[in-house]
Length: 203
Image 1 (cartoon, rainbow, N blue to C red):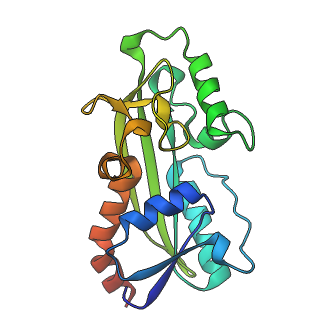
Image 2 (cartoon, rainbow, N blue to C red):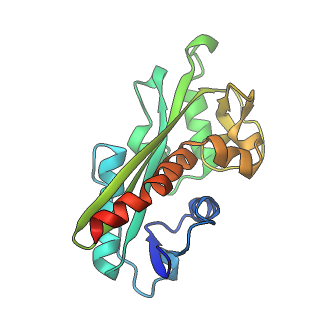
């Protein structure tokens, strides 16, 4: 993708930073909605992460005429039947802070025993050109919901998502370690590995 631009269908500074770090060795200029003079309004009406990612990427690709990459990600908790799921960012109401999201989740899980607090982060990526979706990828990581926040890093639900192999939450990890094991990191590595095939198919 040398000389190419890739528009990220997000203004979330945390996501932009993580994605730029994970694509740092790819010869592509990574922009985001905040870099556009007239960014399109994005909606999330899908029932799955993949549907929402495609919806956002396609809207940006058609508005700009350039390739766009969107992710839709969230937390799925076994004891809550998969919630908050695609509503992860809106779980505590529109515009809720990370602290409010965590507080609501912990309140909902107050009576859930330690052995039943399994959860997973899921990230779906969609790469779209103006004419349609070019490819999609997914990353997952299994973990456990803690009983109180731990750590000052990350964002969203990171302070209560413990990654068992390391014994710490995502908010307690260094950025490099989180990128190495996170759902978004796994999805982006699959995306990078697939780029040669995707680009050949578009010729």
